[in-house]
Every structure is written in structure tokens, then in C-alpha cells.
Length: 213
Ligand SMILES: [Zn+2]
Image (cartoon, rainbow, N blue to C red; front, top):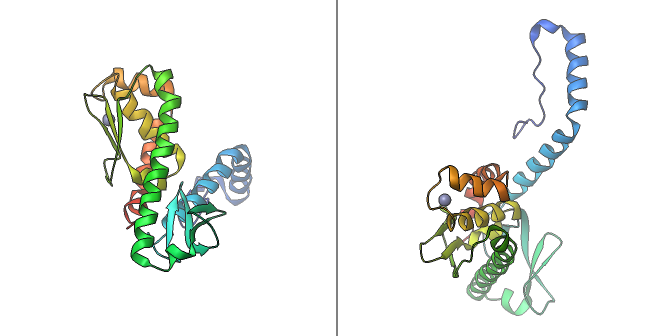
């Protein structure tokens, strides 16, 4: 699956054109489910990366892994609606106020989502984090201190929820095991078998998340 060219099937030259076409078609049919998912993921990644990260009216930012346009609307408070982040007109008029309100709102959303995820995973992983801290990290998405404080980047709210969830599970697992050794891996994989894949996806979209200013 090429980021620009889309789906490509590579066949051995020795097959000849007729047989190559037949085998490629059979292969594509057999892998249809994987291909559909890969195409959807590609579209989603393009949507995330096609953002300018500007916290202003008509700016495009990723939110939950999808591009959202910031627009002024007749709403009482900041809302997400059908691919748009709607901002009350009174706030939209003042660029400095708009930036401040949007940035506070994103941090609140990040905290709310992180809290929900911790409430789900902490009991089943048999850990009890003491405190949740939100920071502005753009490469190290989360950390965990020995006193039981989980630190997460608010920017995770910009990422797909599957990536956000992977960081939460990763940090909670550190309450069971400090390093990244076999014991740690076993805890992570028991609760989120594709954690590593989700983390790689997060690294791929990191530039779009870091660009939000
Ligand atoms: Zn770690």
C-alpha cells in the first residue's frame, strides 16, 4: 500500500501477463478485508496530515485522528460537529481569546478521555495511578513516575483514539514494571496485543500533532 499510488500488486516477471493478472486478482480478492482496512487507514492518515494546525477560524487541526475545520457557529460553547470544531461567535471574533479557549478546551477533552481510559484499564491491569498530569510533549507522549503519577501529552486528543489508548495502557503497565523488559511486554500484550503497531502509527502522525499551535 503506497502512500501516493495506493494499492500495488507485485508479481514475479516470469509468470507472464495473463497468469500474473489472474494471480494478482485472486490474491487481491483473498486479501480484500485487509486491503479495505488499509485503504481506510490511508485516507484517515491523509486527512490527519492535511491539516495546518492553526488554532484560528478556518484553521484545520487533527482531532481524534481526523481533520477538523475550526468554524464560528451559533453555539453556546465549543463543540465538535461533523468534521468541524464549532466555536461561539463571541469567542471567534477575538483571535487571542479563540486560541486560548481552544487550547484550554483541547486540554480538558484530553483529560476527560484519558480519565475514561484509565478508569477502564487500571482495574483490569490491577494498578492504581495516583495522579494524572497533562503536559505538552511532542515526542515522548507519556511517562510514569515512581510515585504513581501518569503524565500524558494533551496532544494525544489530536491522535486517533486507538493511539491515545496505546499510550495510556503503556504508561499504566509501567506501574507494574519499570523498564521495557519481558515482564513489561507481557503486561502490555495481555491488555493491548497490538500496542506496538499503534505506537508506530502515533510516530507516523507525530508531525501533524506537533504542528498544532
Ligand atoms: Zn515506556
